Length: 437
Ligand SMILES: Cc1cc2nc3c(=O)[nH]c(=O)nc-3n(C[C@H](O)[C@H](O)[C@H](O)COP(=O)(O)O)c2cc1C
Ligand code: SF4
Image 1 (cartoon, rainbow, N blue to C red):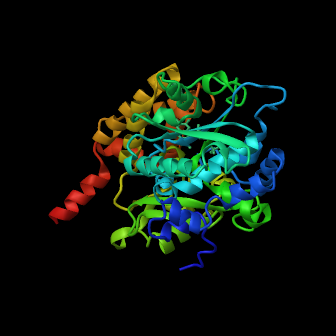
Image 2 (image 1 turned 90 degrees about the vertical axis):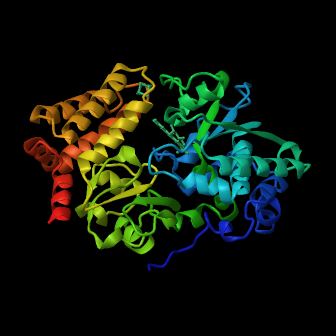
Image 3 (image 1 turned 135 degrees about the vertical axis):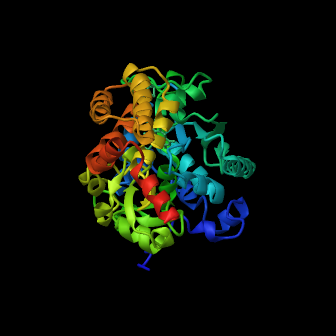
């Protein structure tokens, strides 16, 4: 086992009843908020600490959190109401980290929301939670109620003149509502159709007011950064991607789970040392670094550091840092079919490239997997994907379907061609003949 380094994101969750205010307070919850209020710190200076920490958003794009906060207009000049929307929709296949944070340490998320609200000088936070996350939702709601009763949420918090409300909203099972503008539409009570950008949320967000959208894990990091400083945060991870992150690892591994690791840790180390290696003594065939939209990589690339720049160097993306492992018996065409079907199902249908493209990708992968595909189908998959992405549609869902398609063609073209040539799935056939032998 490699030295785990300092754990902070999951540390409190090791305590019994860590989700309650009593336990969390005893463990230091709300101390960062208290110090800010006590010292009457300048909100711009609080934002600067987050900016200097180099924290990058954990929702998928890796955009610097502190920098995003500075996009909010100056409240002296723009007197509209302003909001923070916390993205807890977590629906990208493979991703399950925010669920753990909300379930086991909801008060840390609340504290992060309040500090973000103070820094951006806003009075209301909306947390949009994936509908299926019943326990995390209930725990977070109970924590909000407890915090409100303790004068940590609401008017004149702790008697220090700062006021902030936090509201919860339950999603209804649509992946597209995790896209930040789809999320805002949904919060407004409308169908979760992403909005064309610009205008960006900081200028025209919820109900047309300035809004910042941040992922749960991004906000969760904030109290630690305020308490311990930007230099402490930068002492972990890499220069361009500081801090720890929560790696959810699933698929063909011995110990699937959510592990706290420093950014820049080798993907092979996460697989072998944390997740116990590929299950059943089998070897690795392929892996996904950051959720289904980041696509399959071949086993040879498992020695890659898990940080934004290194994963980008493989042609993929760090995404949400959610690794999915496929062992030697897996069929990459079947895996691609499952992924394509998901994006086809979740497309909102506004953009023709996405609406039609995702359906075609799903149909073609199914056809190839069933053994009825042609070589032309493989070329069509590539042509379609290039016409869908990048940046050709209102939101990045089309990219999320195109990127894995291009990745499987790049790294596993032989397996696609073998399906066409043999008129069946060669892997399934090999397994069946081994069973019969
Ligand atoms: C189709 C789609 C689905 C998304 N789903 C999520 C999600 O479930 N959770 C999330 O935090 N970000 C999701 N995102 C990214 C958000 O649009 C946004 O970038 C993110 O919430 C910003 O937070 P961050 O800067 O803290 O990472 C999604 C993006 C797309 C295009
Ligand atoms: S890219 Fe797809 S999901 Fe996104 S707005 Fe267009 S049709 Fe909807």
